[in-house]
Image (cartoon, rainbow, N blue to C red; front, side, top):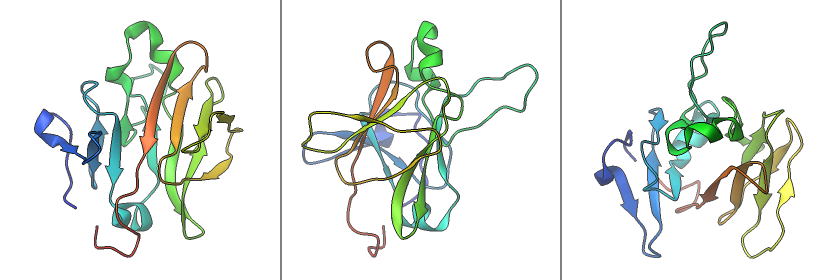
Length: 160
């Protein structure tokens, strides 16, 4: 799977179920609009690379900026920027499985398994094994939030 930065609608993949997804190779992905409802991460990138950070980019005056690989800042209205932290969560390969780890102290990270009704709040620095169809919700559960759906295409042994 080649590295793609989302900047044009052509960078979106159309799945057979109608879901629009982003393709993330080794590049930082800045979501420029709300066209995508999820993203695809190459198994090779996940297994062989550093964690894929999810958050928002801003330039704090006194700190080194965080450049998340999945930057959600431009899909959130200005008054909702705080619902996603600069380093909110990360997807990484740990113990032979794809895992989500939460880093946000001020905004929640929720996960709901495919087919389940209720979502569960993850604790700070908690690891959670990701499965096909999981929904990740970043932010406050009753006000401002961003949702991401996890879809696995193929298996970790595929050349994807």
